[in-house]
Image (tube, rainbow, N blue to C red):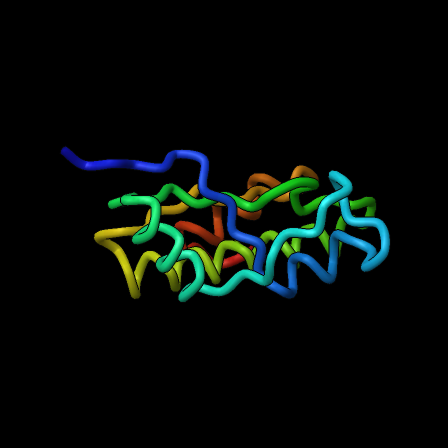
Length: 114
């Protein structure tokens, strides 16, 4: 039997810095530091074979459209790197910037920008 975690949050340091205040984290609780190694160790300890990763609250848009697009891209690139390095164990949900989903889709397909 294969155990799949379909709600596996990743919280890379750049995402945390962009979306939270040190003394007032979103949700009220600061998560432990995240790394690819820590997520794999957690999966091993919990008996999880495959994780479908996604970004945690509050998502990539915190009020600034340009920053949201940039953060979505960085999150997607990190997730793609995880899949490339650990493809048998990690899959990802692509993050869309709410202000430009078409741009996100175009970039994911590696089409040139207009």
